[in-house]
Image (cartoon, rainbow, N blue to C red; front, side):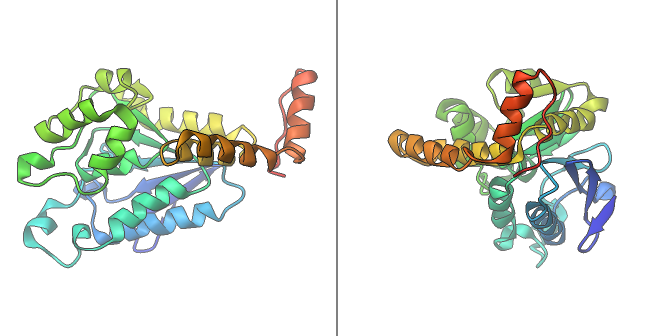
Length: 261
């Protein structure tokens, strides 16, 4: 595992998958500006790496993240990420990187940590995890995209309930409403997230990247524009080597060998 920047994030590679770790376990991976900047640098590096086809976002130690470092928030310290654009810029980057991102949410992911996972493409949740937007319990409300991304994922009614009550969501309910994609035993969350990322990494990388673009457009464009965008992305794949290989492998009943070309 290789540290990034000031050492509060780390990257570990495994084949075509890369794992990014929030690496502040002594503080339950609570986020500061330095940690957010390190995560940003990690995602930028991997976005530029053609060999990486999927990313797992994980927390070092028993907890994904306790959210923003509340000690710094209470002191209104200069390193408080709420005071600048570092955190929203990180979330936009997580959404826009070429590779799908799978969040492995173990232990806890309240408030800003919850919002960080909303920017990921897929979410795996531990069956004992405390997971929710709890800001209204502290006189705040979610300002890292929680009021915008959450309704797009699960609908306005349920999102309104979670934001206004500040309650944690039961993991099984989170899976039932599509907020998370799998609930795992507490000790297996990281492995579940890595397995899901590995499954994606086996697919044709250009197809996966274009599919991610098209899915993002589904939340941003009117239907007709989205359909046209989908078709235009599909046209860019028509003459690629991976399409030829994928079709041939299917006909020959063998595993394809995709190269991203």
